[in-house]
Length: 244
Image (cartoon, rainbow, N blue to C red; front, side):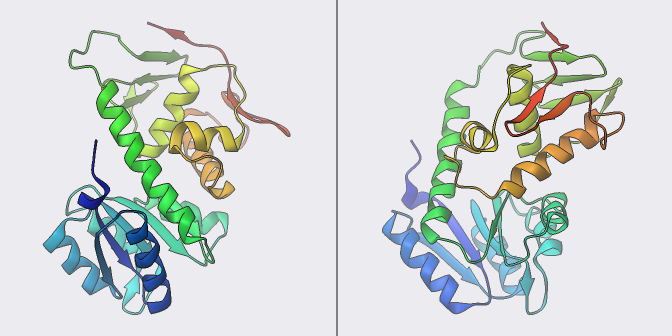
């Protein structure tokens, strides 16, 4: 099991009170390798020097945009990036995920929620490592839904015979639906199953990920026929698949 004290967390925010609050709570939760940056330049320097596992990244920084910084940070390892921002519109969330963010937390936030999300992410990575099969058999975990195929072992989405790029969390959410076709999942259930968080996330996060899936698998994302909304209940993937 990963020791929390070994996890390197970089907090990139130009508000000292937020940085201090997060450091205090995270340290109390068992995280000890905490680093802070208040500008894009400082954040890049941190990424080169320490290669953080987790980055808490504000979108609005004095010398640039956290959105643009996000893609640059990914050049130094593969950190899990949480956006911390007061901008909460669907478009802002979509931009954040498009630039490579993994999760989105709007200000003001409860620092205990941030700690919970980080811990949930670590648990999920540990679970995936434990359950990963060392031997990949042909067609193991291959889900076919007419015009698209999801290959779990290869981490690949194929739409009409062509590979389609898919961010990690988007792929994990689609994979979850593929494993349970025809079953309706609420946003809270999806957070629990995919993000490993018991309903503590922002609804926008799920909605944006659903939209990104539809943009990849639907003929008309605005009029979905595969990943549909069940009003008042949640979402389901229409049961037209055959797993091999």
